[in-house]
Length: 249
Image (cartoon, rainbow, N blue to C red):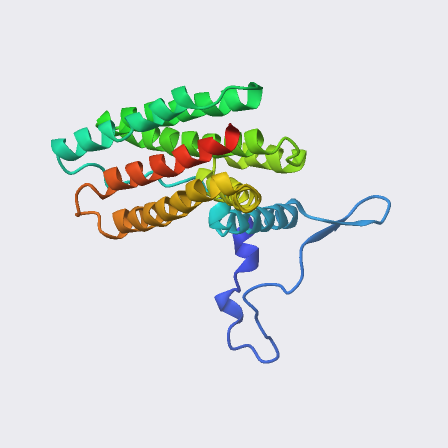
């Protein structure tokens, strides 16, 4: 007689008057030790453990997008001409990094991060095959790193908790980190342009380039078959970065 036979009703008792058979017991198995204490059987404990694991897995799979790694599913360049255009339009970021002010440590780090943006973007667009998705991640991550470095260069009093959280989230969701620190930079730029008339022209150019760059970035995602949209976004972003460098002088 195996353990499973105890849980299955015997067919020999079917139809006997006064006998009611159930398919399972409504209580958990318990055993009594020598002290008279009750304890649940191993099967009950393992069932509770498995339920807890299922709950944890369900919560993990339903976590918000901000806690999920980025999906490196960029459509890529459709032709050699588009690849050449995207690589060439990545080079202005290297030039901007070389020309950026380096008056202190934070400014030097930001300038080097701009060079990193241009290098990562160039390598990504020139790549092919399985390596491409990793370079796409490196491209996004380098952009987010540059926004964090710019935020630090503009404001030395950034909260330590924010910077620590940005460093933790950056490899997982660099786009969110870029959005947060870009927003902080926009606030600083608007305040300084309001106080300094010499920055107002640069701020106006920055606003127009930001709007154009955002529109091209969205269009590149919605219209993947349209060529050279990504290259246009590179140029608009480079123009916006160039105006940001004026804040560091």
